Image (cartoon, rainbow, N blue to C red; front, side, top):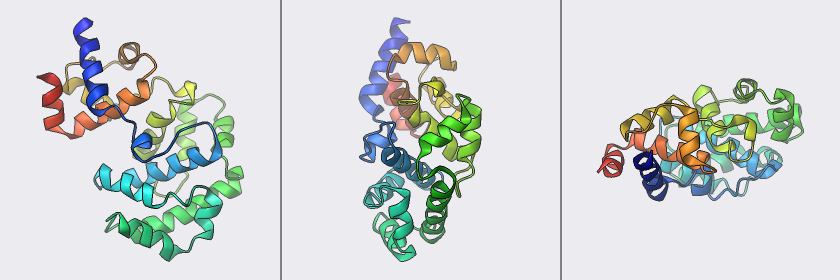
Length: 209
C-alpha cells in the first residue's frame, strides 16, 4: 500500500493536471465552466493529439457559453480551430459545436446542471444524455465524466477502461474503488494522469523507475 501511495504521488506530480486545468478552465458547478468542459470533451473525442485539442479549447475560450458559440459564425469557429492546428476535423467540428450549442439551449436552457438533474444521480444516465450532443460519443462522455467527477460527486469514482489501462502500466490496481482510496480528494486528477500514462510509454516508464 505504501508503494502504491508513492506511485500515486509521483503520478500526480508528473501528470496530475486535469485536462480542464490544462485548458484554463476553472471547473465549477456553473453553466459556463461546464459548457467549456463539454466543448473540450468534444475536441478530445477525435483522433487527434490531446495537446492540440487543449490548444483548440483555449482558442475557443471567448465562446464561453452556448449562446456565444451559436452567435459566432461557422467561419469564426473554423478559424479558431485552425489557429490551434486542429486540422482535418476543423470544419466538421465547427459544425458540431454550433449544433451542440443550439441543442443545449433548446433542451436545457444552456445549463448542463439541468441535464444532471434529469439524470437524478444516475451516472449511466448522465453519460447517455451527454451522447446526444454531436460528436460526443462514448469516448467524449467518458472524458466529460472523468473531469466532472471533481464537482459532481455522484460520478465518483469515475475511472474508465482507459484510466484503468494506465493503472496497470504503472503497477496500480485496476479497481476503481481501490484507486479512489489511494487518490483521496484527487480522483479526477489521478484519472487524467492515468489516461496520460496509458498513452505515453515514456511517461509510464518514468513512473515505474
